[in-house]
Length: 133
Image 1 (cartoon, helix red, strand yellow):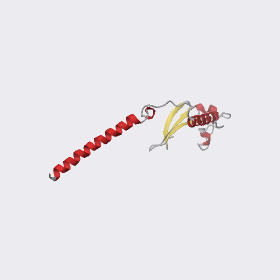
Image 2: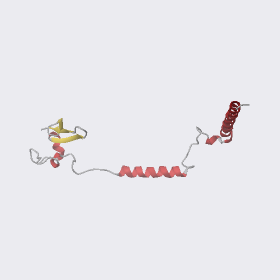
Image 3: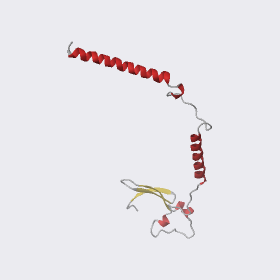
Image 4: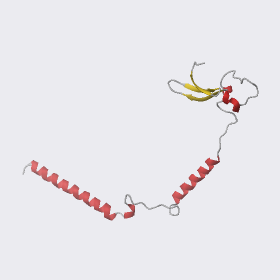
């Protein structure tokens, strides 16, 4: 016998040993593992059976209820231009921020390579850039 035939024989034995090991592993996994723990077969979890799940859900519900109780409000309009533009004044005395709709108002800003702003003036919207009049 030469070295090539010994090597081929050892390779064939190794391949059969691997096939046998894989077959045995599949047999153990399929027949020896309980059916309830197999992949794809899941037990339905109920709150009565799983205390950890119940505690987590209760905590989330409490956090959600507390978040729903919260409210956010400001006393002044944060987009009121009277606090942003120097020497800005209304044309007539006695106007409030709610009446600013037909005056000048900052509606939006776009910050990118070419920053822009949308200004609402006399009921119309205008897109302006730095330096525009």
